[in-house]
Length: 451
Image (cartoon, rainbow, N blue to C red):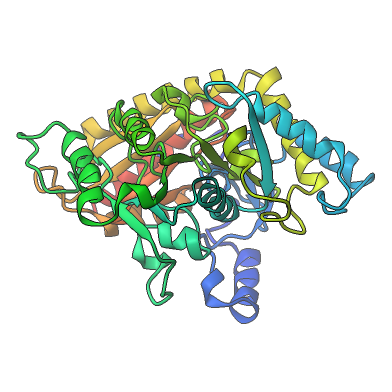
């Protein structure tokens, strides 16, 4: 590389010999379904930097797929985990409760958008949170049907997979799926999902009409329990809807007695610059699903909701043996401490401004960047073969991702066409590290677009 590096330190080629040895063991011991994307074996990490088994140091802008908003191994979180591990590991909260669960629930209830009485119940994964939000909605309304959106990702368990709208790799060959799930178009301004000409439509309105039309041709609104939506689509390509979209959904659902579930598994905990992305759209959902960055890498998810809705299921209707385990709850409390005491939201917003400026500068240099988009520090670039045709450049996206890794930057792909590079750097990533990450991305783009 022509640029000097202060944080990336590659002592071997990528992958190095120790990583290669571990990868060889993985090939023999682990099913193909769990084959790692990056050919490096992680050994340790802190903040935004990760070291592999060969001693190579990388900048990580994946954040464990959006799990590490406070960074790898944050000191407060590690201390809380160690302290709790010496006190209590498990009881099952519904058998023998403990204060750590209640502490986190109370703090999250206070952050519920719009205020008002709210309650929180915990689970292990994002998919579990979605499954149980749907259960809550069905019990609360006495209805059977759920509406989700094209391009959505909600998880890999049965109901969550049924709500998801990307067949490969998540659904192909895995049916049948849960019944009474209906898909509506999501307003994806760069690629109109219903084929309206760019010059003739205002993004959003045709999609809104299609959602209302769904009640005429697919399912009667009296049978719909909930609409579930990501405030910004994650796996779908960091697609930001028009500012009035969630407001429209709130009005539509309220008019028909339908609940609104906002899936904030990826957008929550500061990822978009506010604690919940929902706050930026000025709506109050009935239920919010959370996971990923709740506990900085420990398995913890949850559903936060209006008390009268979330209290609908009876005793033992929802739950699980490990849900809300005390160690993860203590980690979550530490994460909330970081937000409260280190002004993490402000750091995240500043990071978003810095990274967007660099990405937009790259878009002026590289015609292959069709669009820079996102909300706050939840950012992405969509790569195309031609800006006029917008033909997705999936192969180029893979090459840039691989090239960046070889130069010391770990990135993720996304998008229904696999042509989006997304950035989920910890919100407290120092400006100098973010700048170096952008330098490496620009180098990778230059090398792959000039090849």
